Image 1 (cartoon, rainbow, N blue to C red):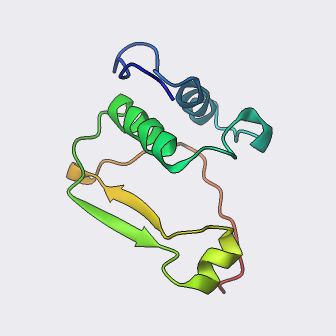
Image 2: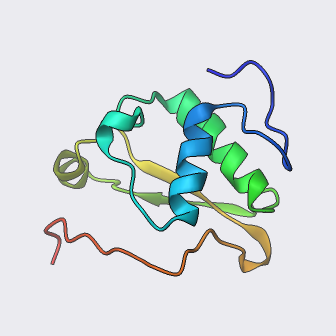
Length: 106
């Protein structure tokens, strides 16, 4: 866990945040062995805060939820629901490429 807050214009406090930001800019995925697959909830929240700050996002105006039922969480291998911010001014983190994963809901 990083000890210092992220500098919005400089280096990320967490090296995984830097790797995720770079991968996004290069339109590539990080393989599971690059350290993200075993990230705990508090570190993930800190990384997300760094990424949102770097993207210029403000304080969330609301929160969205996903995988609320046990069958959905089981399919995704989760122990709790997903939570993500709804950002102000309809700002979101987008890239020029997108991937869609079919996890069997349809």
